[in-house]
Image (cartoon, rainbow, N blue to C red):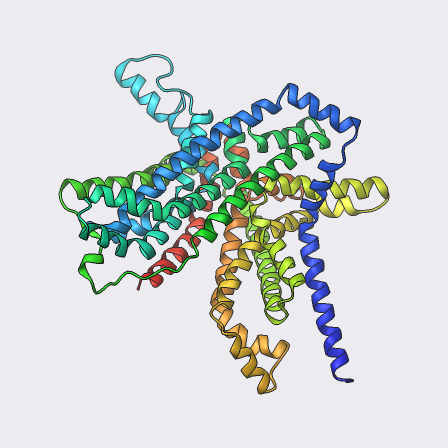
Length: 544
């Protein structure tokens, strides 16, 4: 009994720590919901004023933008998934991983690239005016909702492509073969068999793309598109109205929660028993294409990559090369150092937290532990702008209650605040990777270790950790890249003189110094290729 008491005490402390960490990460969302529900005459007046002025514009612009992005990413993502999964043509294997390349492009970098090339003073219009003697603007201004929809379409379609490709590869071949034997032509087999099978995956991918669209700040801010995210920053930083910012953030959070429910419902519909394609049957293999049909399949796969990756990189390389002699290399070193330190430290903390949470829920899968892990896992769906508002609200309340406290200083003038925001959003990314690693460790191994007298920390160190190293490394890299590209939270919460590559790229592009913005922007693209390579290798290993 005496030995059992310290052990039970240790388990209790571990559980309490798990719950406390989950509550700490959930605090911004809880504070935001509390602020939105705390109705008083002042908040009612603010909401009424917004409803009469800016709110309808935010709502309709967000709806229009989401509708356009949903339609476009659905078409592009499903078409590319069908092309590489159901058909075989020369270069299909190359197209499979090339279609992932736009995942490496932050949407705001694509926005900067297209603006620099297509604007009135850009190289395209300048060359045409000089060559043909034309005058004035030759193309419409790209900085509008149409341009934002274009950018989001070709940076976010991989969400639909990945999920639809997986669904089709697992479920379509046998049913397509059966439809062929019944005499159905190819177009009908694709339309009435393949696409209905992939419909839940397409819906889930569209929901993920829309969550990213609503959470974006860099593109809508640079293009002057008045969405909810832009309205939150304007209310907080320009109008200095925390109540309006909290109400807008609560509306955005409710919309994202709805999209998250749609995505999870679609994912649950995908979890029916799937069968592998019989690779030994020639009839179950993709239909071979040649000639014009093969060229059409290549065009379907190549155009999204060209518009979402190749052209933006080429457009950003042009000002980089032309302004090479004037690039601020010394300042760039400082920006890169700040980015690396923030990203490395946040990634290490998020991965350590994910390992502790996953181990805790594995050893004691009681419902409080599962709820705590579930709460942490939802953090990635919360937009950065919502995290910022939800984090600063309790800081303001604490400062008002205790004027002499240093809470505001620690959150707004040190790295504590920005790292807190990173952990709220990106611990979920690390947790997903660690859970994937734990799914490959049978529970019976824990029982076998216990019979040999190995438990507690020894079980984790001697049994779990050797098998979790790859998953932990993948979690570390994924969080590292996400933090490097994160803009909204970093822009507001970073300490003074601690600009990162993402913040500097945004500020230089906003000041129309796109030649200088090209260096940090392309650096972020190079870093973003890391998870693309990991994802491509993982998909290849699954197919073997």
